[in-house]
Length: 427
Image (tube, rainbow, N blue to C red; front, top):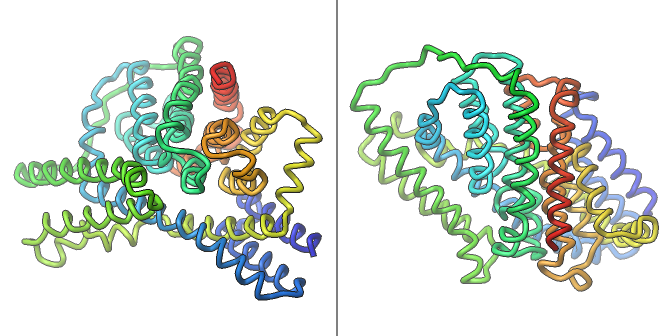
């Protein structure tokens, strides 16, 4: 039985990792893998009722993550629909390439902690395309956006999916993960940023002013700014409210996220209540829901379901014991996990690790979970396909896989190891 389940999982995992080669969307591969793993488990098990009970238990944990992501994505889309992010990006007017690089990276770092690394990378690359013509310089800055987004997402419970999974699973707490990881995360960005500033200064040329854009009536611009500013403030406060809600009520994080979404929904309805249906539609939460990345939600469902089978059959706990015996050093194992997350998606890597190591042995806020949040979050920057932020920027900017390895991988690796070294020295 175990051989069949492991074989299905490995084949499915390879299909996900080789998405660009086999031209099959990783969501399809993940869903098929998850269902087939459970199918093999129930058919080869003598007690089907036990398997169904285990599936229901795992589905409860998985749904918490999915509802959390669904709410967060919808809030971000609502802010974007009201041009809320433009209030931030329009304030960047410098044409000095070094200043622009630092402003974009710092802004990306903190925005990704408030929103998430995927959304932030899309927003910042869109900004970059508006202020800089296509060039090698823009590609370098786009690569730095990936590093900054992943570094910023690692120290926030809502900044990266893998950190969110650990937070919802009870492995980490909000204040602790921020306090313990913010400095290593800053170092993981600062090292490549300093290298880019001094070693590659000769490649950074003055940024020409790009002309173009659409004009709007003055009244429309003012109205849009008021609505956008209000939605940006309300959406940001709503996201920041989620950890507070969890701390006060002890309810799961997705409950706070759904409450914030409901409040923002009411605000959106009130803002546009005097408009007719056609004018109101683009700003409605229903429209925002239609724009969220639904394939990613289904991908998480499929891969987490598949990992759930490995956890139920104790494959992951056996793997953890073998790794401990083979490598011997838990910190080194976590560093390796971070490197592997650059090759394959960090979501299944972290999901597998959560099943490998038990909370009774490694309780909440144990160093294992903190270090794993850092390594899985920042390790994906080493390859352009290693994180959701990287894949998004790759698609928007048409970054080449080999180009990224030549220009960005070493910088990301240096930052990753430097941040890991800082964490281990501190704790």
